[in-house]
Length: 284
Image 1 (tube, rainbow, N blue to C red):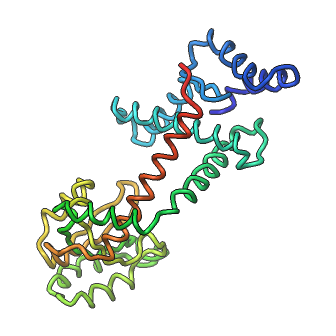
Image 2 (image 1 turned 45 degrees about the vertical axis):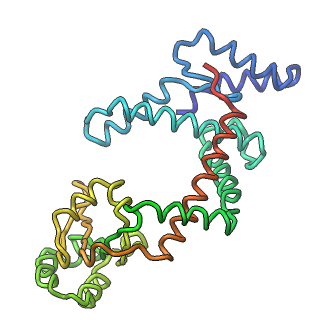
Image 3 (image 1 turned 120 degrees about the vertical axis):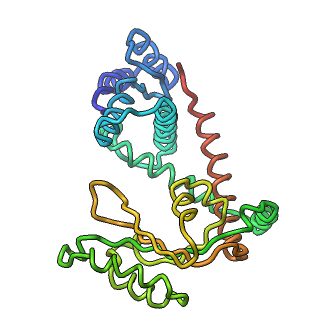
């Protein structure tokens, strides 16, 4: 998608020997004025409408022609522009030495930018975390939580060697296992070989559940002890196995500390990205 911008990068390169950085940007802006495909300019980068349309088409194809909503289109445009701003900032900061002509490797600049911002956001003080914990405790939906066990298994069995249908039917008999030990043994035996799909015990606040409508709907249909098998994708044989363990549990101090740290980091990251956007504003 980035090859369409070769003309603009070439123009900037040719003018480098006689134009200042400011004049190079002016040259790019002037060159883009007559192009109706131009959406905006960020730094020395021209962003075209056709780039966005290409991504939207890829999403539509993946969804087998299902229309992308206007809200999703707007969010994607904003996210794409933000990624371009991060990339331009990373280049200006010389966070990556990749040549500008290889703009198809733009992701390397974005990764470098996010890594640099992430390192800055890591510097959260104990005072900031304690203040965030105090704020979290004021929210009733955060202080109430449920405990569930999850694991992802492949219906085709590990390496496709064993049909799991029979094993999945046995789950109904495990719902009376109040200790959870039998289910844990079962889960670890059939879990997929992937850290994201291995057996876990999850302490989820009501706030977290409300932010995930699908998970909230699943748990509303379950009672403590129930086990539910949820397909992950129509085209995949992977299923999520959820066991509802407890409800109405007070959120632990350790969970609050993790949430507070993540909250502080997230706020710092947003502040840093805001500064990047101010340094590389969108030129319509």
